[in-house]
Length: 541
Image 1 (cartoon, rainbow, N blue to C red):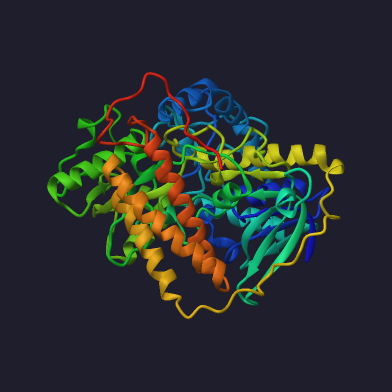
Image 2: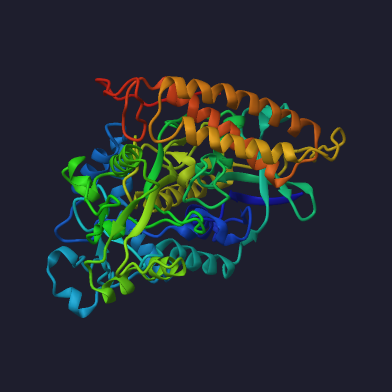
């Protein structure tokens, strides 16, 4: 058994930021399912949205977010997060994140590319992405997530009071009522160590779910293997509400190549003028939206899906060859080098792309401080549903949300630190006395594959009640098989992730069946129009 003041489940931008903000007054543990770099933050390419340009404004950022969110954003939460955007960038600069700055030549190209030098911020280079009316994306070339992650990880490794655990999977959070005690307070978690094949107990005053989203529920995704909805599933089992799980964002442009695996082509290419084309070279986005390639992601993804099905083609193409080769290599070095590995020189070749599951816009219901329905249990980052994204996340708002919610949660924990004591609670050790080692692990592998194919075929970019009902029947059967396996056999990493993923898949389908309209990322053939009043889909355990 381990005792910590704060247990953070997840080692991405949200989790590491919270750890750094609380280490001065608390003993903090951070869990990573694999190596620290295996989370989604490491792979984020685009950047962080923030208002730094003299021609931009808080109100403009809010308006763009609300427009992308298709009427479902929480206006108060949107304003709260956007108003703290400069603070987040300032903190990241102070941590040492190597953001791309303006060259002397770029500094003279006009005010649209010159951010204000506020609070000693360097003149950062800003780019533009879908849904944004201004250049407001702060980035580190085309590998922003990696730059942010590596900076925060290095800071955490050097900070006394933070313990980083790699290769640990949280099984479930522990609440007082599950122990037969008064109240519902969260008091810790059971954590699986695959190397020892044992489950450890970690007691904590505060537990934070920062484990990312659930896009691995789909056959094709831009996400790493760790995106199995663990935090959402654990919160649901603990008794937390979840919201808007039907809104799964499909990134319009994932590299299409037989040997490429989950490689995202950042939206920033389109922000710099890249066009989407059919195999014959015809540009098609202006026929779907006046904003063309910079329309919100749900519109672009559906347009690509429509054209692929109409023509029976395997992909469409992204073309940035009209830009100077030096510009492309300087601004998109990661994409340039990765595509070159597959024989695609993006300075003179078009990039074959397809949509892929990318971001879970719904999640655990929280307030602006990241607090869930369970006392002392927080959810931040993609695991949570703050109301910022509504029915469709606007590009580069997600990393911003990670920092602002982490800062708020840290302040709340600090204000309540002395009044919470979970370290004296008597929690029983994990009991494996009634399970045996499975001789049928093929069942786990088969169910994992079947679940992801069902979700892709029936709960994808375009839905219908018939498809959703078919998915529900199959998911119910899978859930029963997986629950039986969990109860009777020694657990494994694959089983734990599959248990969480099938639960989240059911929440997605149940939410989608409840929404009798097409809004944002949820498009159904049975209800193509909008209802007069937007309403959140809230599920209660």
